[in-house]
Image (cartoon, rainbow, N blue to C red):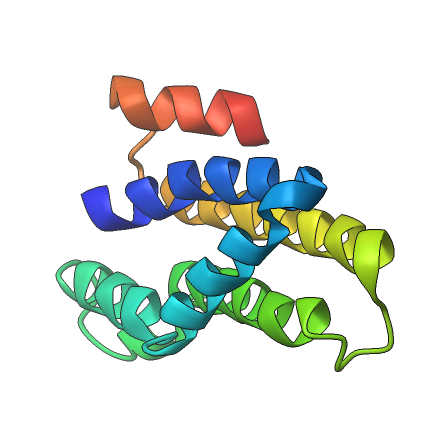
Length: 129
């Protein structure tokens, strides 16, 4: 579970980089690295959920939330590269919106997994819900 929570918190750093024109290039580099294995977090979530669900962990809504979060994060690379019709500040602003939505999906995963009792998870949920 720590990996997904760390992803959620690392997205705060991504938002900060996207919000500063001088660090958007660093953000893009991070997104390129993320996209080398964009299914990593979905697979991790499926394995986590699979410990408590007997059948079809891949179809569980919690795994779907992580899958949607990963897709949103992944789509920011093409966005920042100008392949989705936006450039410059407009692209960065849209990327920030997508990353914040991805964090909401990760909150959904945490809440649905009953992890809100953990202090660090509760803090993440309160900040991003």
